[in-house]
Every structure is written in C-alpha cells, then in structure tokens.
Amino acid sequence: MHTDARDLEPGSLIEGDLCIVGAGAAGISMALEWIGAGRRVLLLEGGGFDYDPHMQDLYRGDNIGLPYYPIQSARLHFFGGTTGHWAGFCSTMDPLDFAVRDWVPHSGWPIARTELDPYYKRALSVVQIGPDEWTAEAWQRRDPSLVPFPLDRNVAWTKMWQFSAPARFGVLYRKPIVDAPDVHLYTHANVVEIISNENASAVQELRVRTLEGKEHRVRAKRFVLACCTIQNARLLLASNGQASAGLGNANDLVGRYFMEHLEMPSGNLVTLGRTPPSVQMYDWGWGRTKARGEIALSQEVQRRRRILNATVSLSPAALSDPPQSTFQQINPQLIEMFHTGKLSDDVLKTPPPSAVPRTFQLMTRQEQAPNPASRVTLSTERDALGMPRTRLDWRLTELDRSSFAAFYEELGCEFGRAGVGRLQMRDWVMQPPNAGWPPSLSGGWHHMGTTRMSPDPKQGVVDVNCRVHGIANLYVAGAAVFPTAGCVNPTFSLVALTLRLSDYLKHSSA
Amino acid sequence: MVARRQFLRYLGATALGVAATGCKLGSEYDVRSLAQPEVLATLGVAEVRNIGQRYRTLNPSEASVNAIREAILGSRPLAARLGLINPPVAALVRGDFEHGRTVALDGWILSVTEARQCALLASLTT
Ligand SMILES: Cc1cc2nc3c(=O)[nH]c(=O)nc-3n(C[C@H](O)[C@H](O)[C@H](O)COP(=O)(O)OP(=O)(O)OC[C@H]3O[C@@H](n4cnc5c(N)ncnc54)[C@H](O)[C@@H]3O)c2cc1C
Image 1 (cartoon, rainbow over the protein chains, first blue to last red):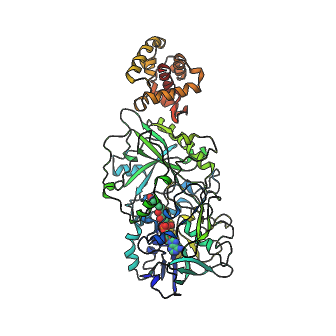
Image 2: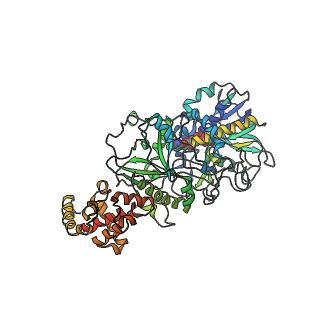
C-alpha cells in the first residue's frame, strides 16, 4: 500500500509493528522480506518516486576534510535511494576482513564471514546477480575464455566480481511493495527526529515532516534506520531531545569511523612474451560483463606486510595516461542526472577493443582503515526541514597510504615470477612516509562506518544484531554498521546484513 | 634519443669488442643479447634506457659495460658459474623474482638481472 504523506491530515498518527526508515537498498531489501509476514510494516521514504532537486538539497552539507564528492551528489533522496546511481559492482568480503588484525587498529567484526554466507546467497536475487559462484575456476568452467593468471595462491589470487544490470530498486520493487497489503509505504515522509522515552532506553515515536511543512507522528514496536550511512548518523545526532549528545551516542561514537574505499589508478602493467597471458578474465565492459576477476593479495602476505586489503583491476590504457581524481573529473550536475539510471545506447553498445592490449592501467580498490577522527558531525546550518545539515570530515591515516606501496611491490614481484608482465608503480605510491595524498585521490562513492558494530558499547554504536546499544527497539541497517570496510563495493554485503537483521527481527520478540 | 636502427648498429659494433669474454656461454650472454631485456619490446629503447640510467646512478660500481656483464654472470647459481649448467637469461630473471631479488626503478618492479640488462643498454647508448 502506498500513501503520500503530503495528503495526510496534519498531525496524523501512523502506527505499525515494524517501522523501516528509508527506502533504498537496505530499506527495500528489508521490506520485501516482510511481505506476507502477517505484520503491519511501515516503510517511510523521505522522497517521492522521482528525483526532486528540493529533496536532494536536504543532503547538502559541508566538507571540512580531504577533498570529496559534493555530499548531495553522492547519494539519492527518493524511493530506491542510491541504487538509482549504483553501477552494480558486487563481490563478497573476505574472511580476513572480519578478523581482528593486530596491524589494523579497531579491526574485527563480532561475526565471522561464514555467518554472512547464507545471506549472501539470498542477497543474489535481490541485487539480481548469480549464480553463487565466486571462484575463478568456477567461472572458467562456464566460459573457457576466462583464464586466470597463473599466480601462486600463497601470494596473490584472482578475486571474482559479478555485475548487476544494475538493479534499480526503485523501479524493480515499486510494484511488489505498493501492492503488498501488509507493507505500508509512505512517501514524502522525512523523519526529522527520533523521540525516545525519558532515559533514552527505547524509541517512542518518530517525528515526520513534509517539505510543505506538515508534521506527523509514527509509532511502532521496533524501528530500523535504513537512511544510508551519513543520514543514519545525522538523524541519531540530531535526535537530542532526551540525550543531549544524540541518541545512541553516550560514548561519542555516532558519526565516527566514516570510511570510503580508495579507488585510485596506482600503477601500470605491461604484459610480456610472444603470447600475452589471457586478459579476458580481467576485462570489463559496461552492460556486457557478467563476471570478471581482480587481483588480490593472499591473507598470508597481508599479514606479513601488515597492510590493508585491496584488489586491482586492469583496464587497457597508454602508459602515459595521467591519473585523474574522480572528485575533480565528475561534474556534480552530471551526477545528479544519473538518477534516471539510463545510459545512452552508445555507451552500452561500445564494442570490445579488437587488438589485444599489452599495457594496462591498474586501478586499486583499497579498504580504508577504521579511524575515529574520520567523522560525520552536524553543521550549524539547517535544511528546509529544520534539520542541522551534515559536516563531513573525511580523514585517512598513514596505513592507508603505505599499504599501496607494499601491495604493488608484492604484486610486481608475483607478476614477474608468474610471467604475467612487469608492473610500474605511480610516483606517489613510492613517496616516503607522511608524504600526503596525490591530487588523484579518489573514492568509490561508498559510505561506511558511523554506527559501527561491536559487542562493546564503548567500541561501537550497534551490537552484533545491529541494535543500537542501550536502546531496546532501535536498529540500523546498511553499511553504516560495518566495523571495517573490506575492499569490495558495499551494497551486496549490506543487503546480506540487512537480510540477517530481518531474520533476527522475525525470530525475536518486540 | 638514439633511433632504434642506429642503436642496434651501435650495439652490434660494441658487442664485437666484448663478446669474446663469454667463451663458454650461450650467445644470449654476449653483450649485444644481454642488452636486450624482455621489456625492451614493450617499453621501447627510451624507457629502457631511462631505467638503466637510474640503475647505474644507484649502483656506481656497475658503471662500465664489463662490470655490468660481470655482475650478471656472477649472479648466476654456483653450478652455472662452475660451467656445469647454462641457464638461459630468462631463467635468471625468473629466479630473481622467485627469490625477491627485485629492484624498483622509475616505479618499474624488475628483476635485478633485467635491471642490469637495462643498465647495459644504457651504457652502450649514452
Ligand atoms: C555513482 C555511484 C555508484 C555506485 N556504485 C556502486 C556499485 O557499483 N556497487 C556497490 O556495491 N555500491 C555502489 N554504490 C553505493 C550504493 O549505491 C550504496 O551502497 C547503497 O545504495 C546504500 O544503500 P542504503 O540503503 O544504505 O542507502 P540509499 O540507497 O542511499 O537509501 C537511503 C534511503 O533513505 C531515504 N532517506 C534518507 N533520509 C531519510 C529520512 N530522514 N527520512 C526518510 N527517508 C530518508 C533516502 O531518500 C533513500 O531512499 C554507488 C554509489 C554511487 C553514488
């Protein structure tokens, strides 16, 4: 069922069993799980079904840290959320991503990777990828032209990715949600405050406002914040009626540990020999690739070198091509046009290059080390709904930078040993410690952290079941709960985690 | 920059003068062949010469053609130095990578042997 909150009488009371705030990748994944579950589920979406510049402006905020995308351009504020932008890159996190690594401060999840395995399986159909095959060998059996590099598995390996069409959740799942009698979708229902009881131990109701100024109240037994990483933190911090530092923020952790993936061209590869090794396996073309490999270092090497997790992809390029920052390269207006999810047919039909390329640009995707100083706080400026705007202070550490050089040294040696070719590191990769970041610094459009998961309320905002510490009926869904970022794009994992949370909510009493 | 044809001619002339020292070795160990690392085909003379120049700057003791060649020969496994086996240069390069004998020059991660090959080329053309 669907209701436009602008059509309700001012001061309406909306009631249900479970209330999900935000209808993006996480919120929609969860709502789909509850269709037919016999509960009254409320799905509150701030935007409508289409892009609206006034709505998008609510995302505007300050950036006081490292250069970054304009904040209002990095997320979409309407039904379907940022899946209107996403490119569909999916892969699974590695077992080591979940472990405590003594060389990565604040690392370690309270769950192991195996805990996510069944949910990754279920998430395949939600993000529309599959089969559940993640080894290079399995994909080679399906397509013998995909030949992985002959790398020593103890040093480096081919990590598989799958590519969603990409699934635009707002288009794909609008009908099933609107048609579901037990899921009540409210659009233009912006949550502006979470109101708790006096000692801030349980949520009583939400305050919802429309851009036209109408206010409503929402009551439910349990509440799930699925507004995206930055918005979840913003909403908790701004909900300071009962807890002056914000809800769930007794230990000053909400908004901290904001993480991105460092996605930067960091080197080149030339293939050698009379017959270049097959690069088909690592090739990607928009709209035609179903799966492809990237190269990662083994757990043993990461442990020995005490570095962060990363992968590299190969794209044909001239060695002299200068690396560019995606922050500078992408025009914000263009980004906001992405919301349609439509790319021109010309782009989709670009034929693969015919000649076998021998030189490649190596694009690194590296996790960011969790860093409490990298954070989201509130600005003094307010948006059209009266909410304090966001202030982003994105910061990186020396480990983030030094990991690149060690990664490339190991990979260069292994490429040489395996006869793949020779690797060249970019100048900035070889700079001495504390040399800072190059102008080509780039991120992956991936927001993580800010309400990280830990069994210890002094280390994290949510517990192992994604419940906000100290608040009986408030949960967080999405990459905001990731304690570490892994090096793969986050959506597939955040959907898997959301399905896990959904199961937990179904099997535990309100 | 030395044009490729001119470079090869120069390389040939120099090789005549020095090749005699490698009497028991295969022809790929003569200076002319050694000065053609596998990366030459993809990177081209100019880039390989830059790499070699960098190696020479970092290793002043290997400044002359003879010294570089001797360094390559001296780095072979003992059995090869005793004349019992005669591994191709490619095997030396691979062995370097296997044992972590690598060097980063202009960002390129190269086996020490092939870095010396680049240095040889640089010595012959500058
Ligand atoms: C250009 C681009 C490319 C990307 N490519 C990839 C990719 O290839 N692979 C990948 O894994 N990820 C990719 N991502 C990231 C991916 O889009 C996000 O990880 C994902 O959408 C996050 O899901 P979410 O549900 O947490 O948030 P969102 O999808 O952003 O959804 C949040 C929802 O909450 C609503 N909302 C916000 N505040 C409120 C409020 N106060 N009240 C009510 N509703 C509210 C919003 O309108 C929105 O609908 C990309 C992102 C961008 C920008």
